[in-house]
Image 1 (cartoon, rainbow, N blue to C red):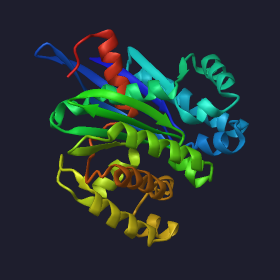
Image 2 (image 1 turned 90 degrees about the vertical axis):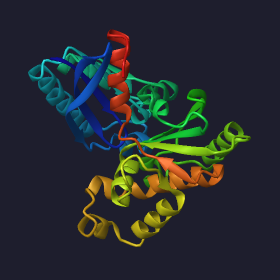
Image 3 (image 1 turned 30 degrees about the vertical axis):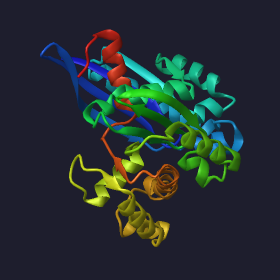
Image 4 (image 1 turned 45 degrees about the vertical axis):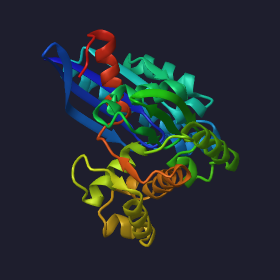
Length: 296
């Protein structure tokens, strides 16, 4: 069995996805085998102090050591490890990359916002959607939001903005960045009728599950707004105890909601589709494309 692995070092959590690769009708496809998520919250250090603390660096090295051991046990033949917004901003990011290489022999790439957007839409979600519609692809992370505009299945414009859930919780989001995002999104979506949204990331996936919407059905602006009002009516403790949210999801889900709702209101989007994919899935698809060719 051919196995690939994706490591996504985000501002909120660090993920390892191990996938089984198979060939069907001349195309390669993958099946998720193992997914592990560790909520390290590197963004708290990076956005407040522009530095990853010794404690968090040590936790990251331990996590990567565990990931390396699992990859060995699962006989992973190819992997790609990417770090995003928090490591981009941490002044000691490149030192941590060297430390991880020395301790685990894993190569870690700190990627720019544009490459992050490219990896996310390597998922080719737009292929399953209506070609006559224009889509705004929104991926909300802990440190940044990646936006792409798809017209007839082709990415026409793409941009990364330093607005994310951890950044907002730490009050490190800047008004001028919001304004910049507003101008960009309005400029790149104007003139398109039937604009719909595609939302990826852990928070929108959780919101979709909580909505009890049918599989593959879009989430309406109205429903998302109602869920936001419901979530904000609970305290953090109540969101954990009464709604059963994980502690590391119960706080970030509020700013995530605010980002999606704001973008939908700015663009007049009434519906957002929520495929169950993210950065790690994009990495796996990228590995298949680079190493094997055709991907389904």
